[in-house]
Length: 217
Ligand code: BTN
Image (cartoon, rainbow, N blue to C red; front, side, top):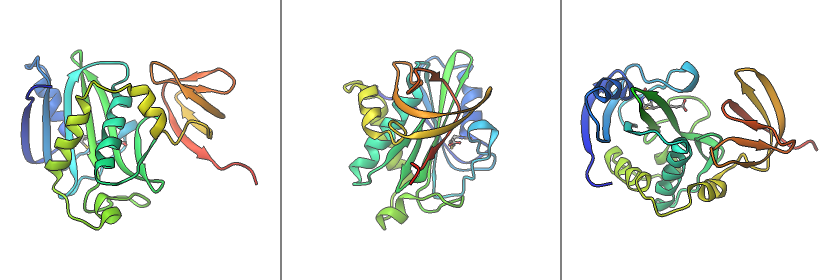
């Protein structure tokens, strides 16, 4: 990875938005870190509540078709170092005890990729989510967690797809997927080399919101 330039901010609108402005001028990878966000954004135009004490950062890097998958794996590995077992709900929600602890928003802009990561550390801003401190009952500094994630993000030594399969809680499940072109249901067999879900009937899904269905009793 070498050393990547880190822009540290206090309160900002959204680190993805700040990174967009910087992306126009920078060719090398860089990172924007904020203590809190006033207009944090999630996937599908949702808000991402971002009070002080959480981790909010965006990596600007070159695009690669497995970027979201690779980011989810980096976070799961960093959590593993803290003895936190996590799983990845496709494409890249990071769950602990089946509750969301971290979200990833990947956007393409000016031919670069912006990977925004929001990790709950000392609070759970939305219902039914969890946080590092509620799982471990220890205190953590956001910046140390960011460094650990960054190290794994730039670690090219593993087979990302294989590692993703180990962490995936979606592979093998019956799911309902809300896609732009409608609802799909089926059993998930695997993900392909581009990070698409492969269903049992052979069809592939590139993006959508997955709901894990419980097996019938
Ligand atoms: C999701 O919907 O699960 C993705 C949430 C991504 C939130 C992060 S926080 C840092 C970066 N800046 C944003 O405005 N969003 C991402």
